[in-house]
Length: 333
Image 1 (cartoon, rainbow, N blue to C red):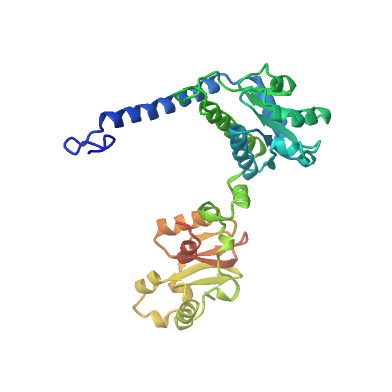
Image 2 (cartoon, rainbow, N blue to C red):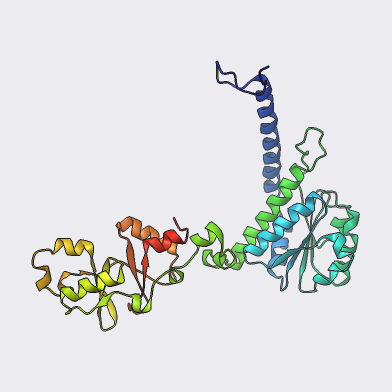
């Protein structure tokens, strides 16, 4: 018997059952998208005050919630932490059994509850009020117990849950997560968090590779192929061969003033061995600095169709060589 969920092989069109499934998926996406648009259209001074409180935190942003709100809260805490704002998730039940000691008067509590009446949050909220710890609530019901106790309430949109029976946390959790992302990104901007700062918290994986700096990959010291401008080409060729980068740098008064590459050798084949390194080298070569992102250096190599670059410091002195293979081995592509 044919599977009714498969496409009709004669028309390559979805079956009626498949069309119904796609319609259900589309309806959920549209319902949640509408809720996000509504939330964006109703931003007010409360959101600005919440950002002020977050920016003023001297300790950590403590995120808490139960059930699906707890799962979302863990992700929000992780987003804050990875973008330069120290944060942690504290489960309210564990907080009632000793983990309240993780929360200090230098912290801020960001509490998530769709209903605002989650009983497990009572001890944490009471603790925050007792020690004057700033409390931001994200809830659908600003007039709830949680909303009344909070310093700032950020209301979720009054939109239906996207599930067929209207009770499974779907629209509400999506809105909560999106609002947490929005706060984290706005706080990044407020704090002047830069791309270079991001690498400090993301040293591993593909993202860490893309944010790696030239100084972490370059070869330095005795590995540098350097000759003075008056050196005979026989010496320059020996330096190029022994160091293995396919080039040699020309230094004058400690500064890099030229580079000899394989292309320069081909362009100067006639009488090459009777010439000096300085007369063969390309002057004012393309270079990079140690603090540049390795991904940017790789882009320069690709644009210039070269496989290696000299790294120079602020004075123009050579301090390293970055090879294309170094970038590839590090996972930068």
